[in-house]
Length: 253
Image: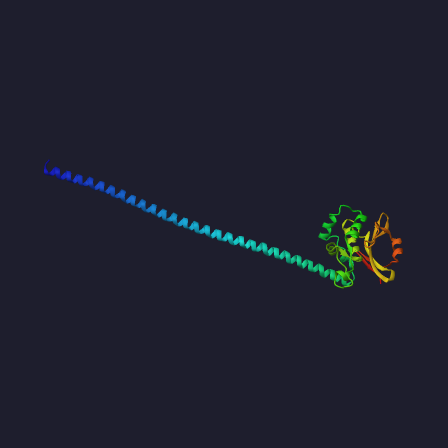
């Protein structure tokens, strides 16, 4: 091989070497770029994961706040409901007071009271004689001054009489009339009547239109059933002074 050929060979080898080096350099740069892209993707993924965790924490915090606020709203609604019930009860008391100022005694007969309805539903019969016997036997006759620290006249609501299991004549009559009304007897058929008896003593009883006639149930008596009205008035020498139920009342001057 002469010097000219050798030079050509050297040039060819250098060219081939340059091509190989250039190819290697290109592949290296491509690989390095790929590594950078992969690192960037990993960094981006890490950032998004951190954001995701942060968002989950924020969502959890918001959900906890909503749960607390819902609890506060429920508590507030309960308090509002209680206040509304208190206002309603107060309005009823005011209404009762206004009626009592006018001697409107209908407030004492409460057949629609929840407690009265519940109690009346527990009585398995509508027979007025059996209901009368319950009041006669289960409510102990007690003068007002013994129950209410020497207050000489106090009319109990039916609920009070059932709770105390004591009461005088008008308390027992009010309870009996209320139970009969709650068991379905109409306001035109049953009423509490009050008046004067012998020695001008006040007294109260129940009158019921029963089996075609007006009859009397007096829970303070020992009678086992009703007494015919005319006979009862004759027995106790009664003077009518008024009557009432939950719909109407009458007071004689």
